[in-house]
Length: 85
Image (tube, rainbow, N blue to C red; front, side, top):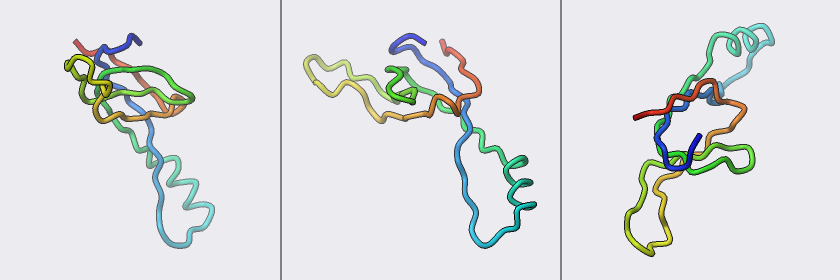
């Protein structure tokens, strides 16, 4: 991916349930309930174990805070990456 290009990343998010469960129901839930998320934004880099997309890029000169609303997506959770035009 190239810095400041727009991308859509499809990734699997974590989820949780409440209450007491048996192992059979836990296994079925893990197989059935994949929480696929699609996130769009401007790519700013891969840092540690994360791809970082932002919603906004500043065009103000010498602002110092150039990126708005970063989203940190775990690299190992990514299933698909599409470049947007």
